[in-house]
Length: 306
Image (cartoon, rainbow, N blue to C red; front, side, top):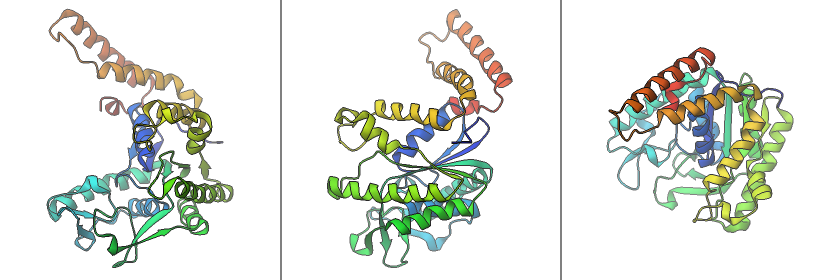
């Protein structure tokens, strides 16, 4: 890419579990990153809907609340981690999160999107694609595979509508095996073709080959967890290193190293907190924090302690 990520750039990670993992790694090094404010999302339409909602900041209302299959409350824009026992508590939470996401989106320069599947569920009642079915009966939805032109229209629309943002698209290495391995490959193929078309036609759209790195470089089932679906921590770290080389400005390497060292200190748990050795450690840690603030003021030190 001609442009690369710097400390101080606002980053927004959206999409599959892979977006969660890479986004948290960025955040853990003090980048100004917000990760999946609607929860994990898998298909292009739900990701695009989330982007538009963050951009306009329109609060969620009573009409959008549903009763889930487990007798909790949520919306079709969020995943199951947002379930709440009452409608009131749900609206308080998701609107507070939306306000934060809206503010972050306005200042974000980079939007990194990890797409998992071309399959979508469309509600019979609203005729809208949902981000999650929330354990409601399958009879309430149509399951549809997006065509390549439809996916292109959805994803290219983001790049055109928000020209001040840089979009990095990737296809998640997470395997969706519900339709079998052949079905998974067809779904991924549609995403790959769509993203390729978008990146060719939009100057602010870029592609990072996470899926290809998993299949073509790692190429071994030992890089999948026991469920044979999710990449292992080792695989994620390997792809993360490739992402750093691809997307992050090389000039930020010293700052990243300093942030990682301070992060390790912040997470240190003393065996003897009353000892003189620990008091010296605490003094050294405070010196490191001051040094980092002085030399790298754009690092979000608070994120290092999370």
